[in-house]
Amino acid sequence: MTNDFFANIDLSQKIASSYSLPNILIGAAHQLIQLNYNSQTQKYQPQATVDLWESDSHPAINSNFIQVLSDEIIVGTQAKIVKLSRDLEKVKVREFVDIAAMAINRETIFVGTGGKLISLDRDLEILGEVDLELPNFRGGKKNTHDILVYDSVAYLLDNVIKPIYILRVDVSNPSHLQIISKFKIFGTNHHLKRQWLNPSLNQWYILQSYATQAGSGEDIITFSMNRSTGSGDFSDSQIPFPFKLNSMASESLAISDFNFGGSEFEGTELITVTSLPPNWSVIHERQEQLYLALINAQNNHLVFDRQVHLG
Image 1: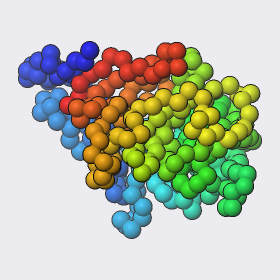
Image 2: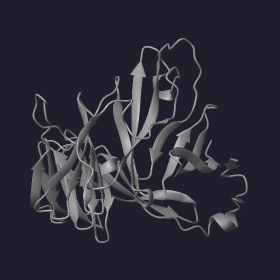
Image 3: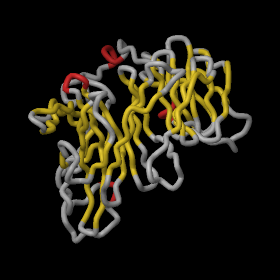
């Protein structure tokens, strides 16, 4: 049963003024802006702004690459990583040819760039790197476009040009990165959109979208997190535990401008999900409503529990 998130909240001045909300960092073009919450006005107000680049000709900040640590902030764009103090003072800058993905795990920063996975320390000094070489790929190496690190393993999604791969890299020694496994994923006009883990179930989930002449949809595929699992190739029929979110003939919000025979939207569109448990997600249902839901897996079936109506 769904619940209206705002139904039972009394937004009186007295109660609202007692709320204490965290500061927010926003990347806007080439600037980083810190917003502080004012409990009296019940609004966020700009507190500090820093120009990360000398001009707006540089690539814009990627909000996915803003990481707030205990005593510093790490920001990335397509070409640079910037280390700042909590007061938004620039401490150090490191340039790359391109940055396709970035993640931080404890004291180590991981960057996907130039067909490599590179590890850096908190001072932006390079510790190690490994080439993401793929078999039978004409370019030899490919970038990773999503990095998720857990328990000394980096989970990598490749999502640019066929063939599409997922990889796992041992990062227990940041100075000596080692590829554990490579899996080639076959599909029809498909993309690997995002990933998350459920260590208690030993499962690695990947959201895949696809499109055919009949329509489009999404499904979730899952692999074991077991480090002993080797490399391999997987077609749609071979992928372990495929969870269908949309039917083959359905329309999703992202392709609403295309004609797929007038069929209605069916199932669930997964918009985003947290990387580690509890795996909270934002989903789009048939009635074109948004919900916050907790993803649980039971007997190889996905269940969206504790749904909260967002609007």
